[in-house]
Figure 1 (cartoon, rainbow, N blue to C red):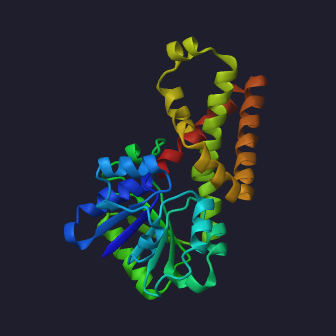
Figure 2: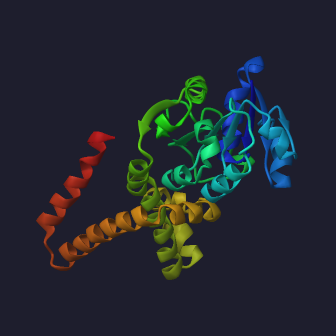
Length: 276
């Protein structure tokens, strides 16, 4: 089975590594608009071959779109002439806009998915083995996909040891705003607030594990996250408003020296990790 991966960064490159383990079962062909990414992917052996011809990708049995959300929507328009048996899987981090913009002619070809995994790093050198193992793979609106495409995607996800859950696209986007997108906004804000107040020497001298953990994802690709924030704007604003409400409450408790209430507020937050 020929697998075409569009986008050879962290997600696409890591998927290539996972599928290459199956030898003759999958032949992995990579495509990336960035020439340096093409070269790095070849040097790192992330895929079996790299093509500069998108028409080659369109002939694959499975096409994986591991690119930013806006690019997924744009690329979908150029896939309208693929075979009815082709399976197209997108790995976009927001789903509703993608779902709404898939051309009707190839809607059954599409399986819209979101792997809940990743790191703050990007590009082919960020690819790692085992990225998808035991991680959640959210599949949205599976009833809109053809049976062949669903079965093909489920087999691929099983092979990379991902744990599949099904969800409505709009429901996914609201949950993702609170669990993933808002935390990225907070991390960017933490990093910028410190950069505005402290010089680099103080940051290096004083930054401990807590600050490094909270600011780590502020290293994430601005290009990718700008797209995600734009696509999931309304849900993201709702989650930021909720976060700001909690921060304001914390500020009030400290200003008014309501220490016992502050303690209970912290205890409530502790209980989150009883669920995780």
